[in-house]
Every structure is written in structure tokens, then in C-alpha cells.
Length: 134
Image (cartoon, helix red, strand yellow):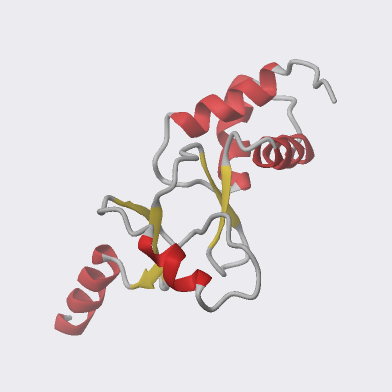
């Protein structure tokens, strides 16, 4: 199916390409409204869904109820803070060997994988330490 060109969709994708903080749809909406004041939240959600389906962006679920979005569609891994739900890209060596290990235990064919690591980020650890000192 051929999609009509959309400046709003381009703006959403460009916004994501210029950020590394993995914003939520609400944050994207707030930012895109600066350029397109009449854009609706529904339009932002529809475009994020379409861009995800087209493989132009990826959606990250953190468990906090709000999905986050990433323009980096290359395989990479994330660290998700269980306190503040901040998402950080992890720069690490290739761990594709996990595919071989998982394949030995899988009743089907594995085509790809995503790995998220969870814990407490440095900022939350610092706040916790500062709170204990107070």
C-alpha cells in the first residue's frame, strides 16, 4: 500500500532522529506541536504506529504504561531504570551468541531478539544516597 507523504510524519521521525532519550508519545506530541500547533495526539499516535510497522522506528515498553520510541533501528540494547523509567542505549560488544543458546531451547525458529537490562540508574542511585544523608 502506498502511503501519502506527510510533513507531520516526517517531523515526528526527524524529532526522534535528533534525540537519544527515547521519548513517549506525549513528549513527542508536545514537541511536534511547536511546529504544527493543530496536530492532534491521535495523529501522533497513528504516525508512531505506522513508523513502527514500517520498521523506521522502534517501540520500547518499559512497564510504566507508556511506550517510548527510538529512531535507531539497528540492533542495540537498552538499560531501563526501574525507578524513573529512563532508557539508556548500551554501547557493548556483540552478544549475538544469545541466538544460538536460545535456539537450542526454542521449539521454533528465532529470527531476531531484543534485550533490555533493568536496574537503578546512576541518577536515582545518587538521589537515594543524598536522601539517606539528609
